[in-house]
Image (cartoon, rainbow over all chains, first blue to last red; front, side, top):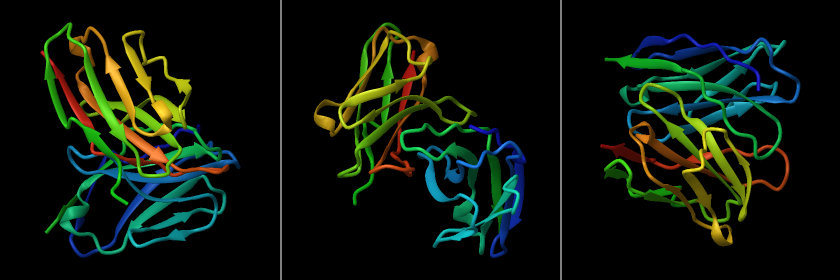
Length: 111
Length: 115
């Protein structure tokens, strides 16, 4: 699976949009971009995933650049409960493949 | 949908003892994964099952570790002769696939402390 690079940490203001970047310059055509988050002492929570088109669900939006070498996770209105470690993961498009977690971005939402 | 459940949530044991953890996946999910997470690190893959068949094992899964998924439902992870280095959060995830990609949903984890 391709390697991802994320900032170690970032702060954002409550009520504002949080934009979390991820670089995956070696991504292959058959690899999806997945985002998970992990709130302290809990299991990772699935957020969203995409292949090449932008995706939106009730939690977030995923913007993937046209060359697929980077992506941005957008939390439209951050709340204090969004404070967590966010993981960007690139995963081969095939069932049964493991998730390879990096260090993630530690996001602190401040009042 | 009650989500993935894991028991116990916390386990404290003495070095050399055996421990067993249980994971109940989301109903109808045919794939089940085990991960381990040490403090300050992201989760690391240990093994996964499709139905009752164990299809892949990480090199992290030493001979002291064994996982089973009888009848393709719940799964157990046993660690024999525990060592202090086994202290970690053990995470279970499940997914459904009929081909193509699958999305894994995680349980709350079992935190193991080996004294």
